Amino acid sequence: MPPLDRLPLDTNAGAMIAVPSGKVTLSDRRTQRSWLVELAPYHLAAFPVTQAQYAQVTGQRPSSAHGDQLPVEGVSWWDAVRFCNALSERAGLAPAYHLDPVGENVEWDESTDGYRLPTEAEWEYACRAGTTGPRYGPLDEIAWYRGNSDERIHEVGGKRPNAWGFHDMLGNVWDWCWDFYDTEVYGTYRVLRGGGWFDEHWSCRASVRRRSHPTFRTDDVGFRIARSGAA
Image (tube, rainbow, N blue to C red):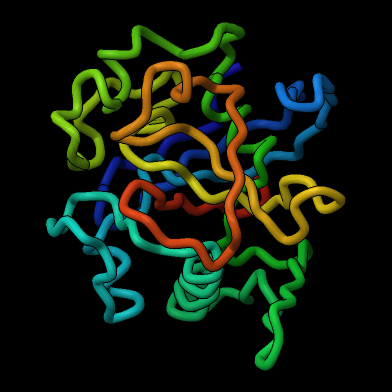
C-alpha cells in the first residue's frame, strides 16, 4: 500500500512522507526470534538529516566529512533526540521527549506531535515499502556500501529511492532508532538500522539489527526524523 501523500522533496527541509498504518514482522538473528508489530499512521523523513539541517537547528557541525548535503554523522543517540526536541520547538510543536537534566533517562510522550526518532518497526516498514525480500532493489542502485562507496560518505538522495520515496534507507549511514536493543543483555544500548558506507553487503538489508551505546559517535551513524499521526 503506497503512502497517503508525499511532500515535495527538499533535502534541506527534511521533507516528510506520510506512511499508512500497517503491520511488519521483525526478526533477530542472534536470538532466532520474530515478532509482529502493528503500526499506526506516521510520517518519516525522505532523507537522513543533513549536515545543513543539523547546523541550522543546533549551530553545530560534528561530522568528520564536510558538506551541506552529506548526512550528518558523528552524532550519538542522545544528540539525535535533542535535535528532535530542538526542531519541534523551532516549529512550534510540543517536544516528543522529556529529558532528565541530570541523569540518563528519557521519556517519549506519545501524545505529542513533535519530531522524534522512528521506532525500529516504523523504520523497517518504511524501508521495505511493501517488499518482502532482503532489499527493496538491487544494492548498487539503492545504497552506498563498501562495494561502491569508494570508502566515503555520499550526499543524500544520490541513489534510487524505494517505492514510497524514501532515500538511503540502506547504506550511507546507519539510522538511530528509538528502541532499546535488548535490555537484559545490553542494558541501555539502542537499535541501529540500515547499514553504512563502510559496511559489506550483508549488513545492508532491511532486517538487520545492530546496537550501540546511546553516547556512541562514529562517522557512519546518523539518523532520520519521524512524527506521529496521519496527514
